[in-house]
Length: 240
Image (cartoon, rainbow, N blue to C red; front, side, top):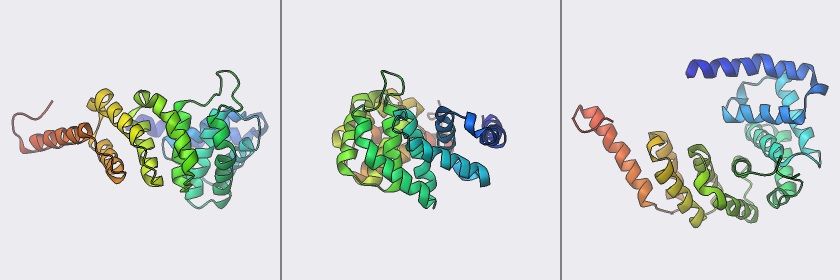
């Protein structure tokens, strides 16, 4: 899996991205948004350098300047600009902040969505929360509106998205007890077997910092610790 990931990342960094920059006028906003999301998903945006980084930032900013931009594509480039903004790109940070402040409420209300295509989905809301967290943009009213949307889909989110929502809320210091309890239930009921030690550490840190204890999460963490201790001691009851 590690070798495959390296190969894919190398192919996009060394092949797809330079090729897209070379034919700039033929590259659609959809391609720009997917490239931005790819680099955030794999957390490899720091590896983009020189002209390629400038091109992707510029095209992301241009996408946000279009009033008719698809909502789902907006969330993808906002997250990318928030990531590079937090790393010190002042222009990207300003653009991401303006986009969230100006468009956030409209996006949540469904403004600009054409039918089903491009409409704001649960993963898009997760990305907006993630971007606000990276930017330390604590707009409580907007965060609460996003939480209301997340609550509707809390039991359908992946482990990664569930943890990102909780971590974003913890970072922004916004306590949404009902949502956090639903997210915790999602983790322990639907994803319990898939939770690794790192996942549980992130979860416990977020839930504890917001003072929303959940017995199921604590039990899952205890199980993981017991399994690790049993495997390490060479005793009989541990491994599965």
